[in-house]
Length: 429
Image (cartoon, rainbow, N blue to C red; front, side, top):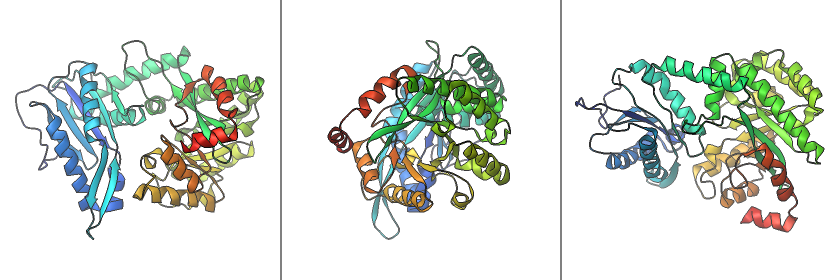
């Protein structure tokens, strides 16, 4: 049961909700820390005012947690209606909010909304099944290009839905339906593309909802398929790298590793095997690990990382700044770079908390002799700020979205052939 709140309590009226939207306030975890709880509540109340004014008469909402709001749609029989409502909510709530601090000063904070949703819900759906599916919806939305993910409900339990997704994903892996797309990583020292991040994609049949990369990974982890997925990504990326190399292109490739891979003693042998097959040096590989994954099992993780580094591969900590307050592991673990999480990059060109946080994170990376990479760079002002504070590399839509393999070679040749003056204009445009 949801807790009773002063605002947004779901009333016991005789309507049948057919759609559920879960709104994730992706910045609320840092709002309280940066501006204090009272000011954070100011932001939340302003957002709830905007949400309430945009709902239809029979729609209802409830504050589930400090970071999560549920919206029941009275009439959402299909994906189109549910997605339309999700888009309207995201547009209404996204933005910059003014807060007054305890000392009377004003600060501006940006809040980015993710919306996960499902439709065709049955009244008899167990609350436990709904709760189990909430995290799945939010994870899918957080990774989606437009920060919206709508997944149909068949009326079955959450367990049945997961089992169905697992079966479809296993079939996709077996039939080689998955694809790898690549997002360029740009070195700020010379404005050239120095590497590519490999990102898994699952092309869907017409009319089927998209499935995000985090959902693919978490489903494979839960179903015992993560080794199969990792082998597929590594083998496919090395095949593509061999194709580019044969044409004179020599980018490095970064691959994300699941936390479960850290306990796989055969993984170093897999790297050696696949690199030998495609004639690729392991020095052109960078494996990305999250803060959480390397902090769970220090001894096993440390041994794993030393093995990977011993083969010549580089190691990166992904989403840096979002997980752990202690940086002691930066001394302990053999890492090469820190990737600053994209959630810090939305509004860093002015005097605001995120600009200060990013500067500190870059300084931390350099203090430990590591490379700092800024993720999620979407505009010229963010890029200019990262250049000013000494960030080493960046990636984001300002340069390119993730692209299929067949587009990479053309993009690389065109981008890296630009003369330095043109690159400077691009950088500061």
